[in-house]
Length: 224
Image 1 (cartoon, rainbow, N blue to C red):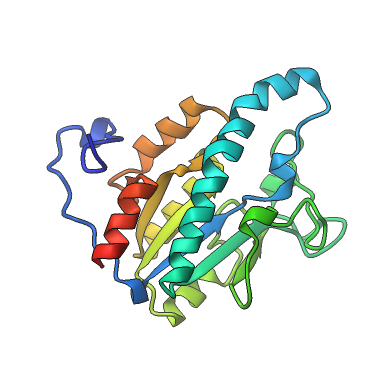
Image 2 (tube, rainbow, N blue to C red; image 1 turned 30 degrees about the vertical axis):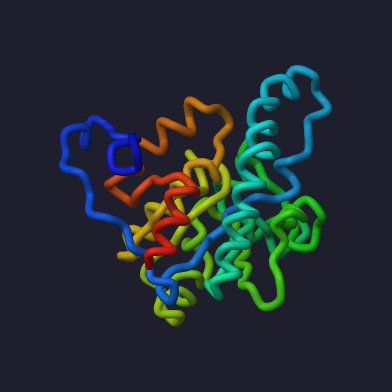
Protein backbone atom coordinates (compact mmCIF):
# COMPACT_ATOMS: atom_id res chain seq x y z
CA UNK A 1 0.00 0.00 0.00
CA UNK A 2 1.24 3.49 -0.88
CA UNK A 3 -0.06 6.92 -1.82
CA UNK A 4 -1.20 5.67 -5.22
CA UNK A 5 -3.64 3.19 -3.70
CA UNK A 6 -4.39 4.61 -0.23
CA UNK A 7 -7.34 6.81 0.72
CA UNK A 8 -9.58 5.81 -2.18
CA UNK A 9 -13.16 7.03 -1.98
CA UNK A 10 -16.13 5.38 -3.68
CA UNK A 11 -15.54 7.53 -6.74
CA UNK A 12 -11.95 6.45 -7.24
CA UNK A 13 -11.75 2.97 -5.78
CA UNK A 14 -11.31 1.42 -9.25
CA UNK A 15 -9.44 4.27 -10.93
CA UNK A 16 -5.98 3.75 -12.44
CA UNK A 17 -2.99 4.66 -10.32
CA UNK A 18 -1.87 8.29 -10.74
CA UNK A 19 1.44 9.19 -12.34
CA UNK A 20 4.55 9.67 -10.24
CA UNK A 21 4.75 12.96 -8.37
CA UNK A 22 7.77 15.12 -9.06
CA UNK A 23 7.85 18.43 -7.22
CA UNK A 24 10.31 20.92 -8.67
CA UNK A 25 11.84 22.89 -5.86
CA UNK A 26 11.39 26.30 -7.47
CA UNK A 27 7.70 25.61 -8.12
CA UNK A 28 6.76 24.13 -4.74
CA UNK A 29 5.94 25.62 -1.33
CA UNK A 30 4.94 24.25 2.04
CA UNK A 31 1.78 25.80 3.49
CA UNK A 32 1.30 25.37 7.25
CA UNK A 33 -2.29 26.00 8.25
CA UNK A 34 -3.62 27.01 11.68
CA UNK A 35 -1.23 25.15 13.99
CA UNK A 36 -1.77 27.82 16.63
CA UNK A 37 -1.40 28.05 20.39
CA UNK A 38 -5.15 28.12 21.00
CA UNK A 39 -5.60 24.56 19.75
CA UNK A 40 -2.89 23.09 21.96
CA UNK A 41 -4.35 24.39 25.20
CA UNK A 42 -6.24 21.68 27.15
CA UNK A 43 -9.75 22.45 28.29
CA UNK A 44 -10.57 23.15 31.94
CA UNK A 45 -13.54 20.78 31.60
CA UNK A 46 -12.54 17.16 32.50
CA UNK A 47 -15.06 15.76 30.02
CA UNK A 48 -13.68 17.89 27.20
CA UNK A 49 -10.12 17.02 28.24
CA UNK A 50 -10.92 13.35 27.75
CA UNK A 51 -12.67 13.94 24.43
CA UNK A 52 -9.79 15.95 23.01
CA UNK A 53 -6.96 13.84 24.47
CA UNK A 54 -6.46 11.76 21.26
CA UNK A 55 -6.23 14.93 19.15
CA UNK A 56 -3.71 16.56 21.48
CA UNK A 57 -1.68 13.38 21.61
CA UNK A 58 -1.60 13.17 17.80
CA UNK A 59 -0.57 16.81 17.56
CA UNK A 60 2.23 16.58 20.12
CA UNK A 61 3.57 13.14 19.21
CA UNK A 62 3.14 13.17 15.43
CA UNK A 63 1.84 16.26 13.63
CA UNK A 64 4.05 18.94 15.18
CA UNK A 65 7.31 16.90 15.10
CA UNK A 66 6.71 15.73 11.52
CA UNK A 67 5.75 19.22 10.40
CA UNK A 68 8.87 20.64 12.03
CA UNK A 69 10.88 18.06 10.12
CA UNK A 70 9.26 19.07 6.81
CA UNK A 71 9.83 22.76 7.51
CA UNK A 72 13.50 22.00 8.10
CA UNK A 73 13.66 20.04 4.84
CA UNK A 74 12.14 22.91 2.85
CA UNK A 75 14.40 25.50 4.44
CA UNK A 76 17.51 23.39 3.85
CA UNK A 77 16.53 23.09 0.18
CA UNK A 78 15.94 26.85 -0.12
CA UNK A 79 12.22 26.22 -0.65
CA UNK A 80 9.62 28.61 0.71
CA UNK A 81 7.54 27.89 3.79
CA UNK A 82 4.31 29.89 4.15
CA UNK A 83 1.93 30.06 7.09
CA UNK A 84 -1.78 30.78 7.44
CA UNK A 85 -3.35 31.49 10.81
CA UNK A 86 -6.77 32.44 12.08
CA UNK A 87 -6.47 36.01 13.35
CA UNK A 88 -8.80 38.99 13.23
CA UNK A 89 -7.59 42.56 12.79
CA UNK A 90 -10.04 44.12 15.26
CA UNK A 91 -9.88 43.36 18.97
CA UNK A 92 -13.66 42.86 19.06
CA UNK A 93 -13.53 40.59 16.01
CA UNK A 94 -16.14 42.43 13.99
CA UNK A 95 -14.03 41.84 10.86
CA UNK A 96 -14.51 38.07 11.18
CA UNK A 97 -16.51 36.04 8.68
CA UNK A 98 -19.95 34.84 9.74
CA UNK A 99 -18.75 31.27 10.32
CA UNK A 100 -16.43 32.52 13.08
CA UNK A 101 -19.10 34.66 14.70
CA UNK A 102 -21.69 31.93 15.10
CA UNK A 103 -22.08 30.41 18.58
CA UNK A 104 -20.64 26.96 19.18
CA UNK A 105 -17.24 25.33 18.74
CA UNK A 106 -16.40 27.31 15.61
CA UNK A 107 -16.87 30.65 17.37
CA UNK A 108 -13.37 32.11 17.20
CA UNK A 109 -12.13 35.42 18.57
CA UNK A 110 -8.38 35.49 18.00
CA UNK A 111 -6.99 39.05 17.69
CA UNK A 112 -3.83 39.04 15.58
CA UNK A 113 -1.53 40.09 18.43
CA UNK A 114 -2.88 37.67 21.02
CA UNK A 115 -0.80 34.75 22.27
CA UNK A 116 -3.57 32.32 21.35
CA UNK A 117 -3.49 33.30 17.67
CA UNK A 118 0.26 32.75 17.18
CA UNK A 119 1.83 29.76 15.42
CA UNK A 120 3.14 27.28 18.02
CA UNK A 121 6.78 27.93 19.00
CA UNK A 122 8.03 24.64 17.56
CA UNK A 123 6.98 25.79 14.07
CA UNK A 124 7.50 29.54 14.37
CA UNK A 125 8.07 31.44 11.09
CA UNK A 126 11.60 32.69 10.49
CA UNK A 127 13.04 35.79 8.81
CA UNK A 128 10.81 36.91 5.94
CA UNK A 129 8.61 33.80 5.71
CA UNK A 130 5.13 34.87 4.69
CA UNK A 131 2.26 34.63 7.17
CA UNK A 132 -1.29 35.41 6.08
CA UNK A 133 -4.08 36.09 8.57
CA UNK A 134 -7.55 34.83 7.82
CA UNK A 135 -11.00 34.92 9.36
CA UNK A 136 -12.21 32.21 7.01
CA UNK A 137 -11.64 28.47 6.73
CA UNK A 138 -9.88 28.71 3.37
CA UNK A 139 -6.39 30.19 3.39
CA UNK A 140 -7.16 31.72 -0.02
CA UNK A 141 -10.54 33.27 0.74
CA UNK A 142 -10.14 36.71 2.26
CA UNK A 143 -6.34 36.80 1.89
CA UNK A 144 -3.94 37.68 -0.92
CA UNK A 145 -2.36 34.21 -0.84
CA UNK A 146 -3.51 33.34 -4.35
CA UNK A 147 -1.79 36.43 -5.73
CA UNK A 148 1.33 35.72 -3.69
CA UNK A 149 1.60 32.18 -5.01
CA UNK A 150 1.09 33.29 -8.61
CA UNK A 151 3.66 36.07 -8.23
CA UNK A 152 6.14 33.51 -6.89
CA UNK A 153 5.46 31.25 -9.91
CA UNK A 154 4.30 28.44 -7.64
CA UNK A 155 2.52 25.44 -9.13
CA UNK A 156 2.59 22.93 -6.25
CA UNK A 157 1.32 23.58 -2.73
CA UNK A 158 2.09 21.05 0.00
CA UNK A 159 -0.47 21.48 2.78
CA UNK A 160 -0.19 20.53 6.44
CA UNK A 161 -2.04 21.58 9.58
CA UNK A 162 -5.47 21.51 11.18
CA UNK A 163 -8.27 20.72 10.99
CA UNK A 164 -8.33 18.16 8.19
CA UNK A 165 -12.09 18.34 7.71
CA UNK A 166 -12.33 22.11 8.04
CA UNK A 167 -9.56 24.60 7.20
CA UNK A 168 -7.36 22.04 5.45
CA UNK A 169 -10.31 20.84 3.36
CA UNK A 170 -11.45 24.36 2.48
CA UNK A 171 -7.94 25.48 1.59
CA UNK A 172 -7.23 22.41 -0.53
CA UNK A 173 -10.45 22.83 -2.48
CA UNK A 174 -9.78 26.54 -3.05
CA UNK A 175 -6.24 25.85 -4.20
CA UNK A 176 -7.44 23.16 -6.58
CA UNK A 177 -10.07 25.49 -7.99
CA UNK A 178 -7.27 27.98 -8.69
CA UNK A 179 -5.43 25.23 -10.64
CA UNK A 180 -2.63 24.61 -8.14
CA UNK A 181 -1.38 21.07 -7.74
CA UNK A 182 -2.10 20.22 -4.12
CA UNK A 183 -0.43 17.61 -1.93
CA UNK A 184 -1.82 16.85 1.55
CA UNK A 185 0.61 15.28 4.02
CA UNK A 186 -1.45 12.82 6.04
CA UNK A 187 0.74 12.52 9.13
CA UNK A 188 1.12 16.30 9.35
CA UNK A 189 -2.64 16.88 9.65
CA UNK A 190 -5.27 16.18 12.28
CA UNK A 191 -9.00 16.47 12.87
CA UNK A 192 -11.02 16.30 16.06
CA UNK A 193 -11.20 12.53 15.64
CA UNK A 194 -9.35 9.96 13.55
CA UNK A 195 -12.65 9.06 11.88
CA UNK A 196 -13.12 12.61 10.60
CA UNK A 197 -9.46 12.84 9.60
CA UNK A 198 -9.33 9.70 7.48
CA UNK A 199 -12.76 10.17 5.92
CA UNK A 200 -11.89 13.69 4.80
CA UNK A 201 -8.64 12.45 3.28
CA UNK A 202 -10.66 9.99 1.19
CA UNK A 203 -12.95 12.79 0.05
CA UNK A 204 -10.06 15.07 -0.96
CA UNK A 205 -7.77 12.48 -2.49
CA UNK A 206 -7.47 12.38 -6.29
CA UNK A 207 -10.21 14.98 -6.80
CA UNK A 208 -8.61 18.02 -5.18
CA UNK A 209 -5.07 16.75 -4.69
CA UNK A 210 -3.03 13.76 -3.61
CA UNK A 211 -2.65 12.45 -0.08
CA UNK A 212 0.82 11.23 0.85
CA UNK A 213 2.92 10.49 3.92
CA UNK A 214 5.75 12.78 4.98
CA UNK A 215 8.26 10.08 4.07
CA UNK A 216 6.81 9.79 0.58
CA UNK A 217 6.86 13.56 0.17
CA UNK A 218 10.58 13.67 0.97
CA UNK A 219 11.31 11.30 -1.90
CA UNK A 220 9.32 13.46 -4.35
CA UNK A 221 11.30 16.56 -3.43
CA UNK A 222 14.61 14.75 -3.61
CA UNK A 223 13.72 13.42 -7.04
CA UNK A 224 12.48 16.85 -8.17
